[in-house]
Length: 222
Image (cartoon, rainbow, N blue to C red):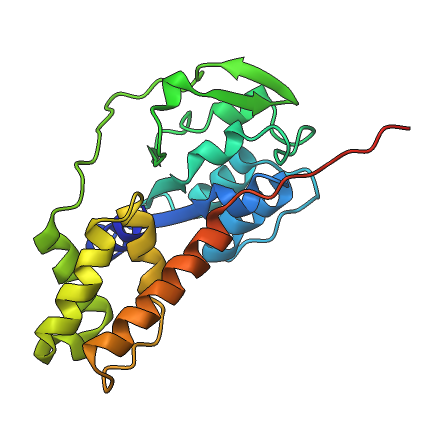
C-alpha cells in the first residue's frame, strides 16, 4: 500500500495535491488525522474540533484550481475497537468524499464492505462509503519483487545471488507485500557472502514477526 502511494505521488497531475494518511497511526485520535491533512496544506486547525471537511474547504477556497486526492492507507485500522477514537470518529467522518474537488482512494487488506468499522464507539456493519470502483490488487509476481528490491537496494544489481535470496524470502512469506515494505528501509551489507545475508534475512524475519504480532492487553477485575 505505501508503494502505491509513492507511485501516485510521483505521477499525480500538476494541479493535484496527494494527501496520504496512515490510519494505523491516526485511528487512535481524530486530531492526528486532521493534523496529517493540515500539514501538507500548510494549514493549522483553527480550533481543536475543526473537522476534515472544514479544513479542506478552507484550503480549496484559496486554491480553486486545485484538486485533492485523499489516500487513506491501512483503512482496516478502523476495525480495531480497542484503538479507535470513539469520540472523534463519528458517522459524519464516513462522508469523506462529499467535496467536488476531492477524490477518495481507500487501501485496505480486506474488502471494506465486509468489515465492521468502529465509529462513535460502535460497530457499523459494513461501510457507509459508496465506492464507484473497487479493485483487488493481484499478488506480487517474482519479477516485480526483484524490481522493487533493486529500487531499494541498488547494490544488488551486481549481486544476483543476494538478490535471489532476498526475493525468495519475500516471495515465500505469508505477507510478501508487508515484508517487502519492511525490508526496503534496511541497511544491506552487500560486502558479505550469501550465507551471511541468509542469517541477516532470518534476523529480519524474526524482527518483522515481533513488530507485526498484536500485543494482548489483560484487564484485571476489581
